[in-house]
Image 1 (tube, rainbow, N blue to C red):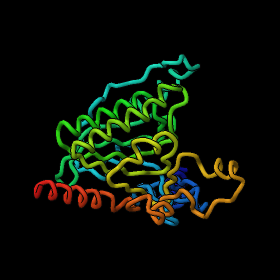
Image 2: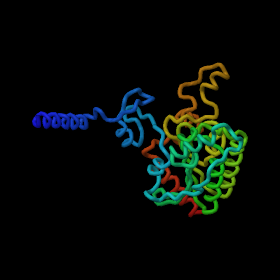
Image 3: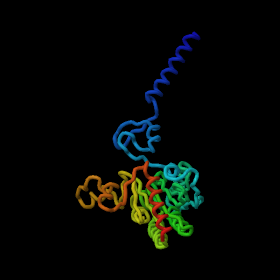
Length: 285
């Protein structure tokens, strides 16, 4: 009996070892672009890009910072800023509390300072998991405050956008953030600051129509949807079929509305080059 038990255990261990070697049995996800099942570990090791078709999965703010910032250089600002429920919208506060618990963030953007290749910068990174990265009063305040902080410290400003637009649960208070953030960015730029706006999938609605589109330099990740109203809304409105790839990053770059489409693995190097050029230009001035 003991020999049979030992043999069964040995066979089970051999099977598990074989599965590890072949990748069978590993947790997988279905890629929404190519439709293939891909191991989660392979996607993670590939900077959360599908190794088969190049589909870009969203990054959390901390994952984004690990990708573009020098190790342990991030210092958060406005950490405790949190939203209320200005319109007493049903279940809004409950949803916010649940998302705080789930994501570990107070709202849909993380702001602070970093170094990129040794060059200091102010940075904001939006989180599409938090009510689709929608902009309410907290996002607006944190973007405006970040621009003011960058101006006071003479730091370049970098913001990674990922948003479905203004937050409907905050109504007019959310729409007011478009003017607030745009004005703050304009004051920062008028004072001589460099603003690099990095657009990721999706950047839409009130965010695309305000601070996200006001960069001195506009970068985007491949295939990111960048628009105010989505293609389905436009097609239904005008009654026409839109061109292939309309409102995607590559289409916008081809039509002069973006400066560069930058692959995820090259983003840090690209940002460092731009910051270094700006730094050198400032020294010559």
